[in-house]
Length: 172
Image 1 (cartoon, helix red, strand yellow):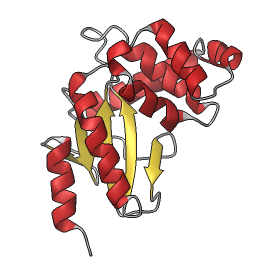
Image 2 (cartoon, one colour):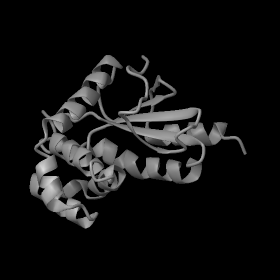
Image 3 (tube, one colour):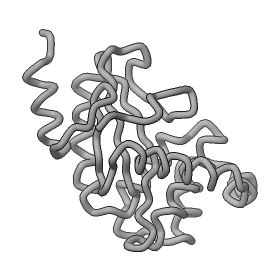
Image 4 (cartoon, helix red, strand yellow):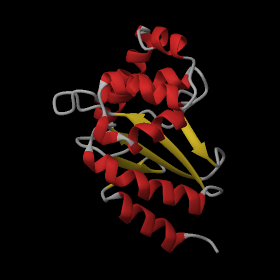
C-alpha cells in the first residue's frame, strides 16, 4: 500500500524537512504499542535528525481508546500555539495518566496559554484535521497503530525494525 495523500504542508513534520528519507507514523496517543514505539522513534530522530523527515498523522482508535481523539485534538490545539511536538511528546511520556482533564495539566506544563487552549480545542477545524488524518490512514491501508510509511510505502514492521533498517542503510 502507498501513502494517500503524500506528505504535504498540512502535516506535522520534524527533523530535516528537505530529506529524501520520509517516515510517516499513523499513531494513537492512547495506544500502548505507540507508547512503546515512542522512545524508539525519539532515538531514531536523535541519531538521524539530519537525515530523516518524520511526520506524525493522527489515527485515534476511539472505540478502544476513549481519550485518543481528545489527545489528538489537544495536540492540534497546541500546534496553534506552535507547540505541536512538545504536546505530542508530553502526551506519550504521560500516556498512562491520560484523561481529558489531564490534557489541561499537560498544556500548562508545556507553557501553553490555557484560555486560548480551552477555546482552540472547541474548534471544529481541529476535529476535521484529526478526521482527515484518520481518513487518509484508511485510504492508505492503515488498520492498526502504529503504522509506518517510508517514502510513501507501507512498512510492515515495528519501530525497532524501522530503526534497524535505517541504521543498516545509513550513509556513514
